[in-house]
Amino acid sequence: MKKLTLKYIDEMPEDIVNYLLTLPGMKRVIKSKDDENAIIFDFEYEDEVLKPKFILEEIELYFKNGRPMMVYFDKHMDNIKTIRVDKPKICCEFCFLNCLYELFYDDNVNSFYSKRDSIYDIEKQADYFEITYNKDDINIKAVIDKYTS
Image (cartoon, rainbow, N blue to C red; front, side, top):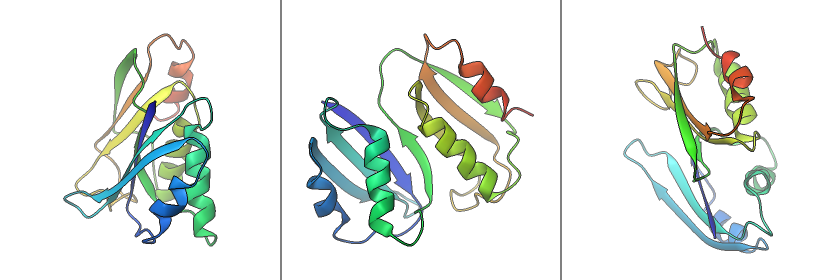
């Protein structure tokens, strides 16, 4: 059984949990809110049937008119290493989302966290990013270097 955590700053429809539970291989979906009222999804799924990319795409398809604003993810991998990127080269909301999604779609990246005054201030410069990744991945440096000042 694999786990995935996604955090969004957009409101989510009440029935999205029921929809996500109908996906083949989905075992559990917990939707909660954190201290800043961000929506957190915790998933348990069968890795042979379902992948994190597919879960994310299903959430986005459910919205039909745009992509909800994801600000954090954790794929709960083992054998990881952490890197901190101080003052990342992110100039706007568009660049932030490009970075986040590029890292999410990399199978060797485990998690992404952005430290700033508020998770809702994604258009402002982050203090730092914290990225965890498969410590056996020798190509991760090229991905991370794009966001280093």
